[in-house]
Length: 316
Image (spheres, rainbow, N blue to C red):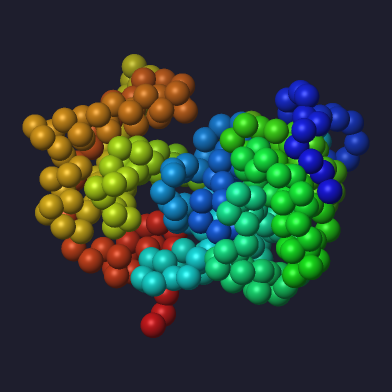
C-alpha cells in the first residue's frame, strides 16, 4: 500500500530508455469521487469536466500522459450510481463499458465518504471485471484519523481482490507521481497509440462544448438541473490565427432558458467570457465565442442527442 506523504517532486520525464509501453487505464468510481480531477492532474491539463455537482462526466473521456517510454491512456468514466432516467442509464452503461476497455481498472473511492450505496453497487459488479484492479483512496488529506483509512482499505480489500492500493489527494497532487510511475511500469510493452504530444483523443469541438458545460455548472449549479447540454455547431479557423466558435446551449424549458440568459443577458455574457478564456488557453490562440440558448423539450429521451454525446440510447 502506498501513502501520499512521500511525494516530493513532480516530473513527467521518466526513464527515456527501455522498450515502449502503452496501456489503457479505466478510472471508475461513484459520482464526485474525484475521477475527472485525477485524470486532469495525471495528464497535466484539463481533458474532463470538473464540477462540485455530481454526475457531470457523461461519456468516457480519454486523457493521455507520457511517462518516459510509457504512454498512459486514461479513460475517465461517468460516475456509477443507481440510474433513474434514460440519461442516467446511458451514463452508467458507458462507465462499465469503459471499465472493460482498459488494460487495468482503477477504482477511485472518496476516503471521506467511505463505502456508501453507490460504492457497494460498484464492488458487487467489480468482481466481474477480468483486468487487474487497483484501489485508490482519494481525498485522504481530509481524513485526520489515519486508522480510519486503514480500516477502509481492509473493508474494501475484503470485498474485492486488488493488486495494488494507493492513498492520494488528486486535488493537491500528493501521491500522484508514485502512482503514475508504477502505472507506467505496469502497462504492457507495445507501440504508442497516439502522438507523443497528444493529451486527449476527444474531438476539439466536443471538448470545447464540455468546457462551456462546466462553466454553466459552476455558475448555475443551484438554479439549473442536469437537463442541459451544449453542442458546438460551428468552428472556423480564421486567417488571422484566431478561432470563431458557435455553441448552442440546449435546455428543456423556457424558464431554464431565462436562467441561462440572465437579466439583460448578463449571465450568458459571463458564461461566454469564462469559457472563451479557458478555450483560448487550451488552443493557445484567440477565440471568438458565440453562445445561443434553445429550448429542446425532452431532449433526454431523444436518441439523436445521445449519439451526439457519444452515448448509446438505453433500451427500455
